[in-house]
Length: 326
Ligand code: PBG
Image 1: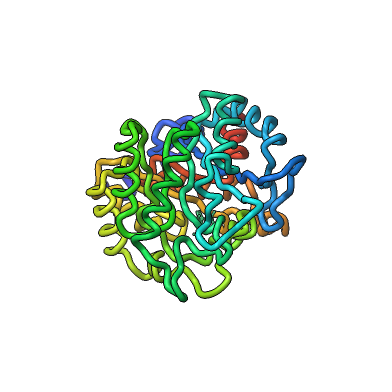
Image 2 (image 1 turned 90 degrees about the vertical axis):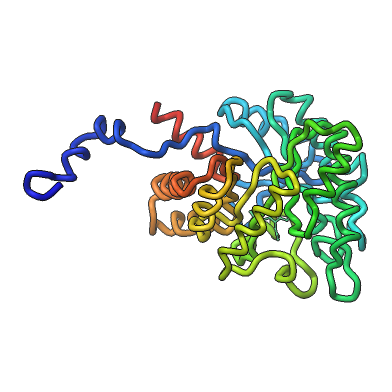
């Protein structure tokens, strides 16, 4: 294959041949849309740092659920903002809590929308940490009991899949055991397996009102410098019977997504997180980049790296763009 007899440009001559040799495709089936549910009435409040993303009270979600249906987006992942927070995050496992009621409401509005729930304590604890705190330490094993309780209330309310995001050791096994003991052995667990301690979660913490009041999350979330360790975390979660493994964030960790893809037969998910979303919006608002082009390039790069599923705030805009392309 030597120039001039071989010319690489020949298979890029027009959009038809480009379509024919395209290696990766993006479809609406790849998307999971994050939804923020807030206790109260008559609330649709825009998240300051995330254009187009809202916190909704349950009486206000019908329009959103219908829009997701019209766009054929298969799944949502739910985050809750309770009215009351306490030391152990009791609202997280209240069977009448915001997420539990939210699942029921969404299933009433559209039983076919696949409902995944984020399981973590940080939105429910008054200190904003992901588990039980003793002094300034987040203690692992007592947190597992709480996470399992939370997961059980979610599946009792009708959740289709549980997604623990806390990064405690042993949580996939603990949740699996609780679900199995309670006849929910058919409910899959998608673990946030390689979740990094990332600056890219900044806007989410506005959206979910979950910033830690002291310290940081570096004793449980991973060091951005580490890749081998990501594979270890993934393999541990697979041994604990995870059904889908996730890498988070996505764009700064495409190498990790690729590594995980090469080393497991399970579906791989990637979380295109809040900061990745907000940066693109901010630059587009300034007229520095083209919103649609950069959004699509971002999502296709996550797919190309090896993700089967993408959790993304772009899901609705990307679905609209893909519909236009048909
Ligand atoms: C924890 C959780 C976080 C995100 C998803 N689940 C925040 C954190 O770990 O501080 C971040 C998602 C995003 O930035 O879009 N409940």
